[in-house]
Amino acid sequence: MDGLDGQTNPFLDLDQGEAIQAYYIWIDGSGQALRGKTKTILKKTMDPKDLPIWNFDGSSTNQSLGENSDIYIKPVACFKDPFRRGDNILVMCETLDHEGNVHPTNKRNSCFANMEKCKDLHPWFGIEQEYTMFDYTGVHPYGWPANGYPGPQGPYYCGVGSDKVKGRKIVEAHYRACLYAGIKIAGSNAEVMPSQWEYQVGPCEGIEMGDHLWVSRWILQRIAEEFNVVISFDPKPIPGDWNGAGCHTNISTQPMREDGGYPEIIKAIELMGEKHVEHIISYDPSGGEDNKRRLTGLHETASIDKFSYGVAHRGASVRIPRQVEADGKGYFEDRRPSSNSDPYVVTNRIIRTICLGE
Image 1 (tube, helix red, strand yellow):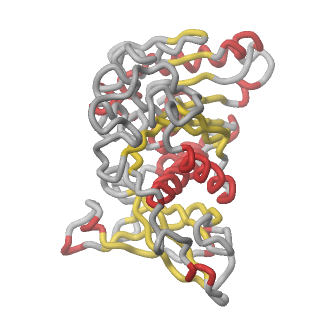
Image 2: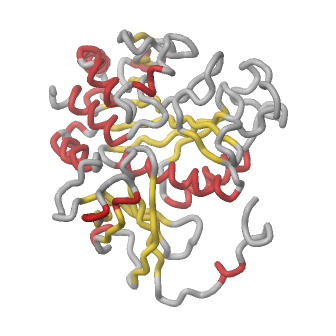
């Protein structure tokens, strides 16, 4: 574990007076990576409206040219900082251009606007974030043999034991840090491929889903720094007979959750089927190219070229849980979003289809 001579950094025990460190986080021009920097503020707050708009060099994040490099960051959500602790905070931000308009890489703004349009339906989301651990090179899966591959998939899913599970300390640290921060983390488990894990965030209503998932990703990568481990959100990190990584998205509206809501679930799923291509384009930052490597019809996926749904069917595009069918109400799971998807884009596309008729 990195740190000052392998120990906890003693300088973090120093009193910081009335000053508070606010760590501003934003999504860079790739649509996948997070950036961040710290600002000193003098007022204890968890309200983003109390925080000033700041700026950064967009030419270094693929968001502007050097001759007009300033990009503004506007605070939109605050969380407790599990690393600095005390009154220090993590701040999720939107990006604005030099004139204060929504930046082209800012996908949250339109998502928020559409969530507001259908807020009376109370859309809830729960996202299952899969990821893979690599060693410090970012090339070799963490804990895999130096030469060759581990044994075939089978014993690793929800497994226990050093021969089956790698990186549990990171997973446990991430879970606790998310709880401390106020992230709505709901669970975690080891996945089918060794060194691959999943955690779940939700239920979250509306725009809250994207805010919580993005900050949970930042916390995960920040914790992995301490262990000199690289976190990959690649949807097919290892080619061949290994499971890919997704961001299965669970969806419901209030009418679906009420007694007799099952027909509303079927109606929404069929609407999504009519917009399959549009959803695939929105479900990874490359417009579907990344997901092509994952959505093959194998390894618990449906084919990227064909929409399907079924009860308890993990090889379908959309799965209806068995209990939901039995209860006649509840939610459904869209299994198509990739692990590197933008939750603002994914939830926005879903709402546009099932609530706004777009």
